[in-house]
Image (cartoon, rainbow, N blue to C red):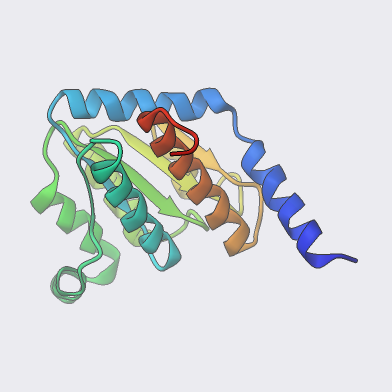
Amino acid sequence: MNFFKEYFDLIHSKVSAIDSEQLVKAVDMMRATSKEGGKVIILGNGGSAAMASHISVDLTKNAGIRSISFNEADLITCFANDFGYERWFEKALECYADKNDMLIAISSSGKSLNIINGVQKAKDIGLPVITCSGFDKNNPLSKLGDINYWVESKGYNIVEMAHHIWLVAIVDYLIGKIEY
């Protein structure tokens, strides 16, 4: 058995399973948000938080679409302390989201309560929402977005790699280059 060949073949199969038209819909949503003066807000926990930061910076710097993620330690600890960990994204969106913004919510399991509450707040505000999840197809997050990306895997790294590749591919599509 060649672990790495099987591993990379598995990632390739999961990444390639998405309908590319679903990625184009995200591009259209981001362009419309930017045209209306809005920003892309990206939420995630753990590795997904790191991914949110990466994609947010790339959208802003390379694709010219304003984006933020909520990964500042002082913001997280203050809001989690004052409102509870399950509600801190929701409260951050109350403070930072504007009516023309959109949200990308990333949760491998699709069961992270702070992410779900954040998505509910975004919907209450009227923001378009893209979700990225994995594990069980009928996880709570996978039913909440205007666009819902799902990876058929129970492996965190497999799910996160697929999400990351899809989101980076969207950035490169916006830039208009595969390699630069």
